[in-house]
Image 1 (cartoon, rainbow, N blue to C red):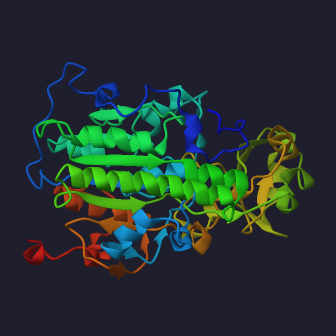
Image 2 (image 1 turned 90 degrees about the horizontal axis):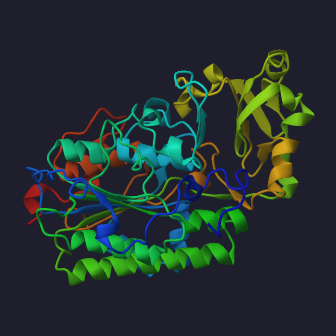
Length: 435
């Protein structure tokens, strides 16, 4: 856990959510239906011989691909299709957007509205990405249906290498293969594990694999998006993707395997000089702060409602509103888990309390969670493989549009979702030309 800071230092970092797992790189270490004594499901009735791999590079800002240090990604851009941008759902943070990518639902619908949450129907429990019990509790995830569940219901198999939500039996199911999160597992080891899954016999091999990298986000938070550390992290992940492409080719799967590269959000530079304290406007002991950073979300404690209400409106570098007043375009604020008060900081500013900052000790050098319309919050979308046009660019898309594309590639009926396959259809080679 050496990359992690205390709880409030990296509130958006996925890596702290889970305990250590066995070393990756050996498929036998994954929890599987077979290991549990269950019969592996039959192959998908359609497109069963075409593996699909979804890759997320946490904190990967859209313009990072222009730095000239990601040759594997560039190979996929040159020989595949990219979107002009991938816009996250609001709030542009890790857990909500990773679950959106595999459900096609906005956070307000799938219910994973932040990395930390309260739920009036789950009394006395606070969901925390750092808490192994809540991360593995399906009650926090069941408002959405992740793609691996639909694949299993259709008679197929899925694998998740550290994907958000995969550690809970959502709607009664895990992916057939999965690992608990372990930040010490390197990018290369994660790819080793994916390749081991591809080495399984055809009747056991996953149809859908979700692969997650965290190191770019970690470096961005600690050192800022323009740092040498971010460049080094990008180079590490890109080398792992090159390893993945080489492994797919060596296994004779290059003409069968489709890859979709995405991310949960971008990153913007921040520092100690751009901190805003809620304490300067109210008695912070009278509010229950659920989230601080690019936005602050809180509920009033007894005696605190009048002060919280007085904070509503525009201030220098931030604006506060009730959940009902959150702009409709953000599609956020209706779910029962969203706190009553929501304050949005201007880009590059962070909202906190003095107590929270004291526990952190310093501001982050990079942050996300801002308005999802900001270009700095956007990520790349790259689609590569036999299903996709080569050297092609499509218009920018919302991240809810990724899910219906994945379902289409797998040949399964999508669950209810907020995306639209028409927004990515131009990336696909028409069926009559595919062969």
